[in-house]
Length: 87
Image (cartoon, rainbow, N blue to C red):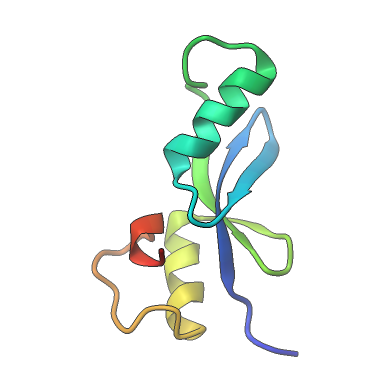
């Protein structure tokens, strides 16, 4: 099996992961979820992370480790991943 890769910025809101394909950023996902659930303000109880090509939601720290191992980045600019690091 090939190495897991990061494929999308995502948030987990009310226990459910939501993602948009690249080049979407976290603020794009937050805005879309806010509109979907009918909230005028961005959800405050959301966790930012990423989706992998295996359909798994991971937090920013684990996403950085996955991206480095999959050689999606040449170096870690910080301990957590930002979508700007990939696309």
